[in-house]
Image (cartoon, rainbow, N blue to C red; front, side, top):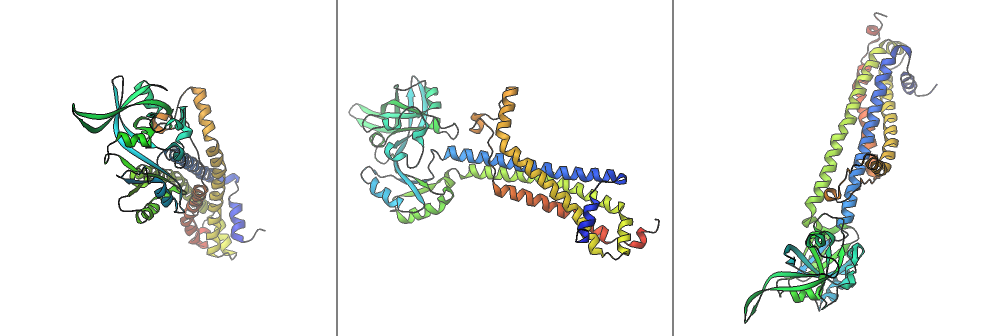
Length: 416
């Protein structure tokens, strides 16, 4: 006989018998309910993790993690300052830039843009812009050539392609003998990049040479500084504080948590709310388990009374009911865990197959920045879901076990 006694009896009670098929069915329904809740939770959390990962990968492929800004010209001093910034162990790359706002004009089409002057030889240290080029080359941005790299979406909007001329108009004015005229310059489109849509990079940012940007924007009108890449992007606030103490007062430091933190906080909040809402599925299954165990206790009142008369303690009876509920919880959680991991691992292929068969598109890149359903399984989520599902199963056994604990042998056997 399996010991302890409560485990042996609990295992026996979980087996179906002729006179309690209905109870066994309800127990099976509770088990499947727990499994379904675990499957849904693991799959949805994995999809949310996938979206979060893909968005971060695409966003920080171009967007700076930390930005150091100054209104002074850094053309002659950027190397020394870059070395000073790179001295921090948390930093993996530094690249100088000079930027200003302007309007890009072609054939009557006007768009407001942020013109960012970069050094192609240094830009690869902080972004993968060079790898996002569809046409042309980032190295075409050379001093004095006045070349420009623009996004694919902006190129289509302006109706330009490689080699075409566009005019970049700045808000600054030039005073001449003939009058006051806006500062502008004609640029040649030497490259077109594709940044997977979203966040306005393809439509609102153009790249030119850093020295050309300094010439175009009047002194005091351009923002100069450095883009910084970190080993761990979540250390951006701490690194920003270190840089503020390291650099002279004319430098200001900001980071992605200040500029774009609200968006990523919204993603985290959405994941949390989905987790709480879907957890109700497991809670409903646990509630069904309470009903099942109460019915078991009522059905086994005579058995419980006999066990008590044979010397079984109330604690043994209580643990027996808890064992039965725990078995349902364990089996349901394990089934859900296995099927949930399988579904989460293959959800992208399954979704793509459904899209091909029914000729539909569930995920639009214009809305979600990607055109497929991503999935990223994280061990912490799997452990959390499994522990919560099993924990709710154990909690569901408390009341039925207490009812069994209070069963009086004389009352139970009165009409037997």
